[in-house]
Length: 464
Ligand code: NAD
Ligand code: UDX
Figure (tube, rainbow, N blue to C red):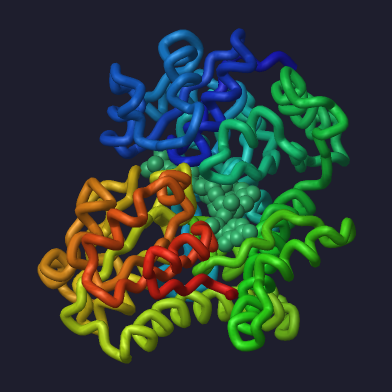
């Protein structure tokens, strides 16, 4: 089966970069990324590629190279569906905020809308690919909706979860540890569809890294991979608190543990807590699925990863208050970093939001500097929590575009995102501008402690 036209529904953090790389690597395939969000599509089509809506190192260069040649961004969803042989569904699957499973289950309304739209528009056979992260057995629901459209079109549903991490998306896509493709391995048509997708990736991924499985294994593997990664962060964060009580240093513990080849060194960096759009929602989803099958111990086991993460964020903020003589009311606190990790402008579930909220409840004045996150985004993140009115957030929080401006007359600095540029700041200059004693809280173990203490900072770092 030769694929000539690909459509991707959802031009977000996954759809955008993934399709840009497919377009670059498969120059004979026309790739159209569609979205209902007109503003987002307009940004993807901005003549100045620096204005595309997603910041990822290396992404704007690929968009510049492929856009208008074989990569297109559009709001005409129907047309792109109609033209495509292969449709990737890459829409958001957030945690439900209403009804049954509120706060736990994945909200599949966007997925279902896509399926219904495909069913309504398609006139010839299609391969439909789950790129979004979905609960195990969603493919059965998709197939049901598509097959009941009754217009004679045949669909093959594949699961092809995305493992890219933000901030390294382009590198992860170019050189993935593995590509996972789940399909109907029992039928000839199923195997043909899987081969068609394997061939797309085989343009640049070595065949031995392309895994094919049944659909359910593929769907469940994605949730499991994220749960395992997040569990490692919560595990080391749990140890960070013990380190602070005992004189052990979490970086030293992490290094010693990670050098065991059975454990491995990645994802053992203690932090103010993991964030991002995936870990929390995917674990909650896993917990919900386990509860649905009445597997209470399985559910409790995974839920603990989230409980630990919430604790880590809260305890970081609580420690700030306690260290600053049990009050931050009216004190100016500079937050360096708002994104959930470096090299992305994404702030979803960022620890910074929760630390700021805690400090605002203690009546602190907050000033934020982040190199890639907009002021509008920061206020919208705080407003979304609903802890206070939008006006109150705007009154208590200022967003500035220089770290030096942020720290002027501040009582404390908290480093909440590990942006490289924070290591290179003139820390003496920052110290000189601050009120004394000048407190410095490193939520990322980013800064070298000795020099900061020599300057005169009251220095605190996670797990030390
Ligand atoms: P996102 O919110 O950045 O993008 C999703 C896009 O889909 C939005 O622009 C939205 O407008 C669009 N959309 C929603 N319904 C639509 C419809 N009916 N028609 C057309 N467009 C529609 O989300 P994301 O971060 O790209 O994540 C997408 C999926 O990929 C999620 O399931 C997520 O769990 C998964 N995932 C995300 C990451 C990541 O790092 N962000 C990594 C792996 C997997
Ligand atoms: C994650 C998965 O890694 C990726 O495979 C999946 O496809 C999507 O979800 P992402 O959320 O983009 O990717 O970033 P990731 O690098 O996993 O970081 C998640 C959070 O964990 C960040 O807040 C990060 O700062 C934190 N983290 C990560 C730590 O605190 N310590 C670590 O050692 C690693």
